[in-house]
Length: 421
Image (cartoon, rainbow, N blue to C red; front, side):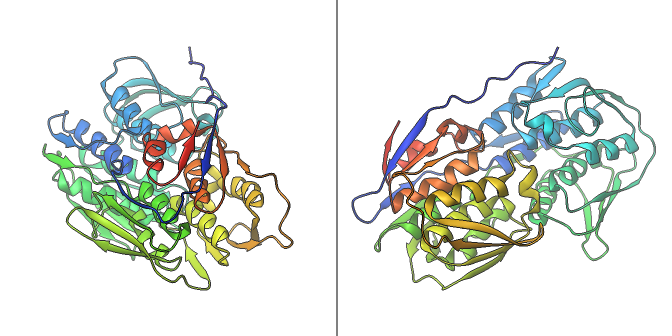
């Protein structure tokens, strides 16, 4: 019996601009990307290691709950990473499970991962539509396969899921990535965390092969860094706030495993300087460039934040590498195209499915004030549009969606703007 899911309550939050420059210290949430990988790897040690500073994000708390649960049905809610990592984990450890989630989760493809796991010996069946959750895992009998090929341009989470179980296979595994490789920094993050737990991985990015030796993980302690995806919204706040604004973000490292640390370089073009300290990073305003061109192949989760920021600053922005955004919590490209119009800009597709431009609407429409931004059950839509409040009042619908990755976001946002539920 598959569970039903309640949608988020249709409440709103009203955000109003601050009176003058903003200055605050933000205690950033921990990285759910690092947390979720560390939890799976530690589980593969038999839960003998220790993971410190785990994220409070709902995705991570869901992972913790399901790793501890003996129930046959594992309901990941809306957590795509949790769905993909647990599919590989439950399969490789020979468990019998039903994996399901909210309706949108069951519209997000998982076929490439399931095919790869079947090739290794997993017995997996689809309960409704082929290639999509819900699915049933019936056990694992190793096939003897030592090499598998998987597309590199669909989801790095499939690749990370396979990498993490590879050391537990009798002969290890070589993964061949075919085509373009998307979100490579996330794959590299997975590899570095695996190495922290004693795994041996050889990478040949020219040949596009990742070779993992067969050896058990070594239980150890891993401390999770603060979340760079969450940091991106504060970069946008500083970029849009008045001159003299300054924010300190706690827990960030200048040399990070997280691909989204690219936000520091990207936002320099939009007028934000990063100064790293022992505590984290200090963000200050500097002159912005007249335009921005960015390939988001390695950091697609940053695109929404930067697009909205560029639109509000009136800076032309050309972007590529956002194909994966169409199969996230919502079709994020379409969502941006719809909601940007409410703040006087548009996202134009200039080359089919590959190249887009942020442009101001001319003439600017006489929209209701303040605009009300629909969030499409997508945490990043809510947080990407919140910094609009540095320039004008704005209403964010379904603010509870931020719980997926940054539950304390609205509490933290009160440090820079008026927040009224």
